[in-house]
Image 1 (cartoon, rainbow, N blue to C red):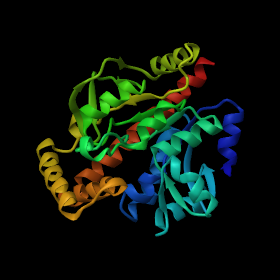
Image 2: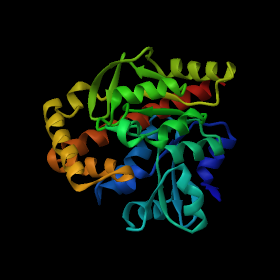
Image 3: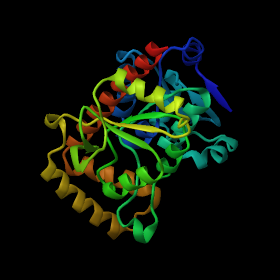
Length: 302
């Protein structure tokens, strides 16, 4: 039920650099019609980093690793694209559905076909008020049992970041900042939380991944937190105001579960006059490029 595009299959067979990309950002994270064009830009950024992009999605019941133009357009434009976490994939696939893969689903499929690098915008994590709701993203558990290296801009700033960092530690998921000691918060360069490790070059990250495997710790993920430069981040004061208003609106409208993140992101887009979209695109392109560079460095180590 997994179809690997010929370019991706050839790269994997040759031991070349490949980077997996999720499709939820295309179907549910970016507005139309920009989403399709940004998806192409993300793939181009991976190529700039020296790797082959492999966007993953479920198309008419088949998990596709690497999308052709028709499949990408389907994910970007169809109204029946469901959001698929790892647990949803077998049900959606058996029913012949079309779905966009989350971090959890993308990481699983990537590992299944032998892709070791994955670029995304921001991870899911522990939601605010999780002590009462138990609302925690499946991304965290999936990464705890998946051999993958994820390049991201930390976790989404709408989440409970301290709790998410605690869960990452508890689950044994390694986290390091790329050229920083501070954990980023998606739209924001600095969440205010310090990381235990900093890595300054793709080759250094490749060495860490090799050490992980040699030490028998290849069963879990490594998270590389790549912050936006300060001059590209969302204005922190604007961020706090819009976040406060968006959380209040979500509570008032009874939004919960998997609907919270897209609801809040849509509110950010409206409330920041498009600034959140600009920051979102900038960070995911930077992550895709860095993931390509790391994948190339892994190949160069042999």
